Length: 148
Image (tube, rainbow, N blue to C red; front, side, top):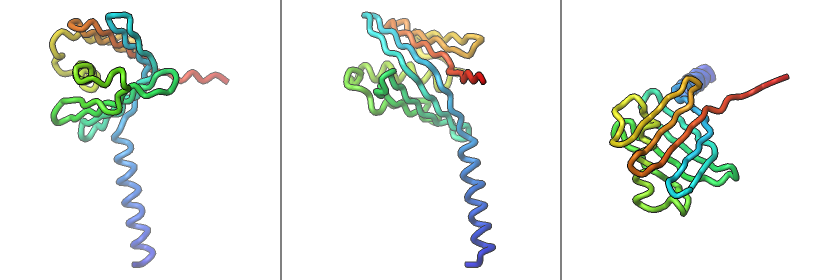
């Protein structure tokens, strides 16, 4: 293969890969999850969305660096699957409620599932309440404060 053809293929691959990377947006939030019996989970939430396919992924990590759970969103099915859940949350009924609640965060413009309320504030923060199970998810965007 000639050097010119190799360079052309390399340039095409780089452009294709950069297009894939640009199609994905990552949002970073401080997350606080309040449970009805005094349970509380707080940490960092990263949400990555692919603007081309509508698919997304989320990771929630607490302050100590322990992963609470990962969520994978399917844009075609509008469903969320929880992966790598911590042992306390790794029960089918808990995973089911959290997955349904997280589907609202991946696609906030669609109709909300029953007994859920989503409030968007001007500063970009979100407050999701599950009225049936009395769970509140509070997400505040992480902003970079750079002072020199």
